[in-house]
Amino acid sequence: MQELIINENNIKDKIHTIRNQQVILDRDLAELYHVETRRLNKQVRRNIERFPEEFMFQLPMIK
Image (cartoon, rainbow, N blue to C red; front, side, top):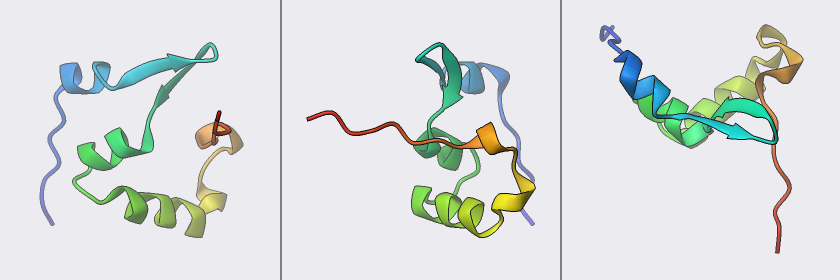
């Protein structure tokens, strides 16, 4: 298994404030773990009981 080394500044750059919540977008989290975004989302959905309710949310699309 590949060792995961994450630079603190790299994480700080990926934290955004959206609707007064600090979040990391799925694409940024997937990049940190070196996986595809769709793979990360699939694994979260398959193991949703392991995550707190507020772990993941989707914002509605604005047209």
